[in-house]
Length: 524
Image 1 (cartoon, one colour):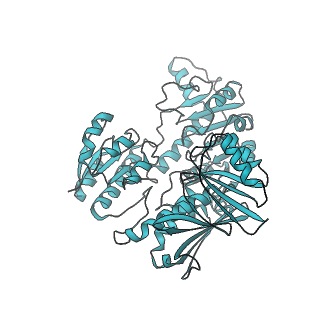
Image 2 (cartoon, helix red, strand yellow):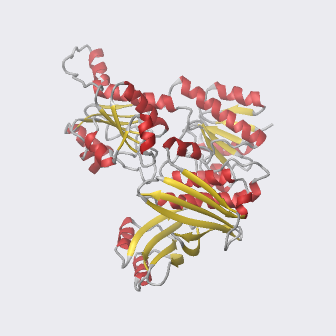
Image 3 (tube, one colour):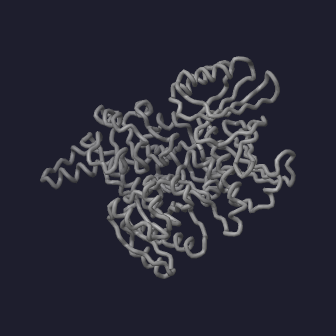
């Protein structure tokens, strides 16, 4: 009988589901890190929420661990790369608390607009300051959603019911799907200028970190209300405090903070500021949903090998796994390359399989590629949910197969439309290792190193020398360099694998090199 440890507070429903499926479950919430290290080796599965830190040393101490289930969405507390390296599946429950979190966002809007928190304190202190707490109606106001995915779209639906006007900035939302939702898709600059209320609904990624920076907050409409029930670190807390004090921001409400638990925060005590302790998913219904889902998913995997809502693995049967594994890795890394270079958002995707790979189950390959593309903006997307999220966003997908491949036995080719143009790249599995074999129609063979500088330049003298000098002067060591071009003197590319992370100023310097048209650091 498989054995699972539940190390955080979960609804009793989880234990009931495990028992009904024939999985033994030990309920030990509140374990300290050292105690967890001592006992984790006994278990096949670990069910957590956000309190337990599943670090590299925990994974190293768990030789029998097959799956970690997160009852909720975010996996900030789980070392996913370490788990993946040991073949441990990481699952989450991305849809179990969506309605609850969306409702909390709406509740925060009402509380901020009507100053409910401070009015409550004043009234219970024996004061009757009716005229002090002048609020504002939500009716007819413009709500600006930064992110309109699963939770954001639910907030939009509720806001439209309140007769609000809803605009959204979301690079992954098509105009057609925006029309279906009843919202207007606009650019971030326009949203900042138009919105009476701004609500954040994006994950924490490199692209979204500090999206409401001091500069962007200063460009908001005077009297704006700011709501964050998504992730800490999406806004500049110090800048927000200053704008609350100056009354440029009329009110703000946050359920999440840059450092949690938020025992002390620069926003605490600011005028017209409301804080709650990361309780967006704290309803009985949501806790039942995520507990049931995580127990069902973990049981299915431990008993039958079925993979659902995995962050680091697609849905693959035991028979298919050995042949598919290297191609799944290739597809995801190609997708990550495409997503990281789709700077203007993703408008359409084409995935083509060539050669012997067409004989394999294409679904996990396509799912892996889509997850790689989407995860650059939507951190919590996984290989199972990626196709549904793509459909939800209204992004067109074309899949095709060619039975022959002119050079390699098997090739996976990905095309992403961004900013009206197409980015194309292809890869192959060579000696069991995924490799890049083509970018923008230019042939080369390059590995997916952890740190890769991708440059697009004119094929003219002086580029390679200037590149090496710039990186050398900055103390950045080049591991390998791979070059491709259309023809002499025309367009060229460089894939440069480096050993250190180049600072932002070095990336900016690369843009200034002779003949450079594009430069970006990619991570794999």
